[in-house]
Image (cartoon, rainbow, N blue to C red; front, side, top):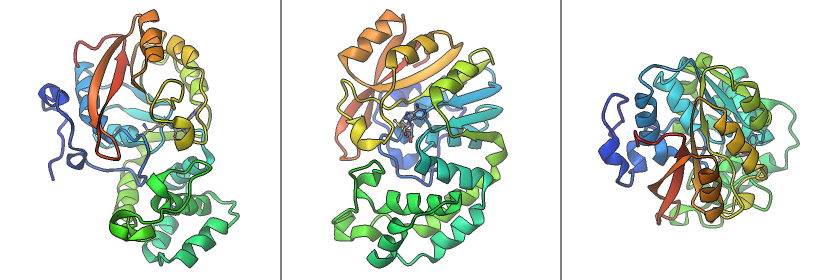
Length: 291
Ligand SMILES: C[S@@+](CC[C@H](N)C(=O)[O-])C[C@H]1O[C@@H](n2cnc3c(N)ncnc32)[C@H](O)[C@@H]1O
């Protein structure tokens, strides 16, 4: 498998559709709207900074592939990941601060039958570790990995393999173990990302922002995430006060207008969605000369 190297020039690859299989998968999540395809762009952006930032902040972390890559590849001295959702946060809290070995062991020994899945789903859990297990089981067995209310168990899965079609316990265990190795580089906060942005504007940080977007988008963020409402106007205003940021959004007139009003540059980056259809998304920043 080809791994990307920070010091390579990725600019020519940026015009092509990235083969997601060529990117090192670090996250235990399969995440709707995940940004694995954007990793080469992230490398090119970070290279353009010419020095390693003290702080890299991802206020809407979700499956966290960008923060994990930044930590694993030493793209910044420290990383702050923020996520408001309780289920997703339980996984990050367990891996970064809790009993990750308990989670790994139970994933390795879990017998993926419909009875066992239903028993976990019916569980009313209180510890982060138990909630993390339930979240991972849901993420691996629910249609499209979608955790939002209204989602449910996949009927057919891949190749008719149903709930087992996305269950790779050894891979999950390896990924969690790998994150443990660089976890000291990451601070996770379960809170509103907007507040973390506000509180860190003067800290010489770089921000990567992938907010939930529902308004004009095709992504139907309200179907994908339990937390999907956001004041985009305010987010753009906060970005205007940042030294350096990179944001991604679905393409829409509303976002183009917002970007223009704040004198930000936009560029369309090709990607493939979960159904393998070719799509484009915006990257947005104060300056995209490097892209
Ligand atoms: C588009 S997804 C991020 C996907 C992520 N970039 C990835 O690669 O997996 C947006 C995430 O923001 C979270 N979110 C929504 N509102 C938030 C808020 N106010 N503060 C922090 N996180 C929020 C959602 O729960 C969702 O996980």
